[in-house]
Length: 422
Image 1 (cartoon, rainbow, N blue to C red):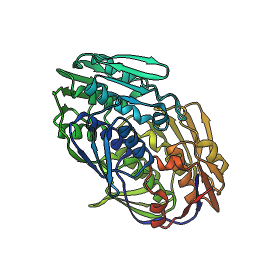
Image 2 (tube, one colour):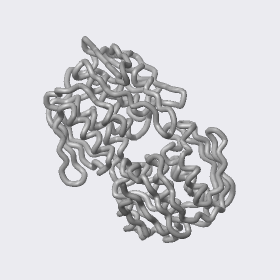
Image 3 (tube, rainbow, N blue to C red):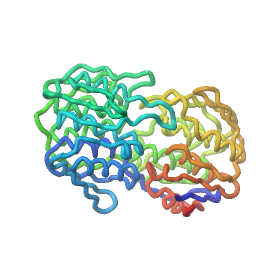
């Protein structure tokens, strides 16, 4: 098992290329199951979760081939095994993405229930609700989701709003299934994230008829078959946001090649409020610090609100800023596993239920810390970059799920960071 060691205090300067979006790549790889023939996806990030999705597709009988660093071709061929075992599902919740495509194409599927998560309950009730509305019979048996549609799925009007807003993966699953359903499907309360728009664009390239991507109402006219397609994944807005925060807290100047300003409006707004100058450039985005950082208040919300996946990183920024800031977590109220480790490094944070009160002005100091989940891991890396002394982060396999070659990218920006075997 690897760990990352960081010696803090270096201002980051230079350019970093933003990789393809993990949260686009996974459902789009799953969507290739809907076609007959080979689809080619480019700008695929080299991540553990992408490898897991490839393993799932292969287990189903598909042929998956990576070429270079950023292309993958998938040919579902004759899917011989409509079963996704628990050993694969337990490592990545997004494996549930294959449920909709397999049900639509084969009429039956058995997928291990993804269960709980360290950041709190993440129910799949909206996935199942939407698929049942399309005519599927679904049961939970011995830890598996067993779904069956004896006849072709039928279009329906479906509301997918939930207690904490719309479901991104739920929207993706139902949208993919509806592309091959008979008739018209209308999804209200759909997720609006750029990753859903990216998936809709890919499905349309395959011959689907999806309208309304990026809005809360999706309209899908079912077709009888889909064709393979080529598609480039959008850049990862969360990776871009993470490097923006890194530039801010180290007092550096960072250029983010490929980042899309329009996908990061809520993050840009809060960083500018905190004292960062953010400029749109021909290549992407450039950030540098205007003055001393000051604390801001944040409430996480579904897109286009402030993303929950940036909450932990912003907590690091607020810990060293002037003033007191409040973070309210509206998506995953228990997503504060990183707080205890930041406290070990000298942060001043008090949690009250789904709310964290961050008193700024802390002088962080390096310490041995343990990563608990993907974004918490990123927050600990950021804290290590600005802390005095050496920080050792263990269990960094979480980072490899969502950040491509993070130590190499930060090294190129001037950080003193290295990966070693424990």
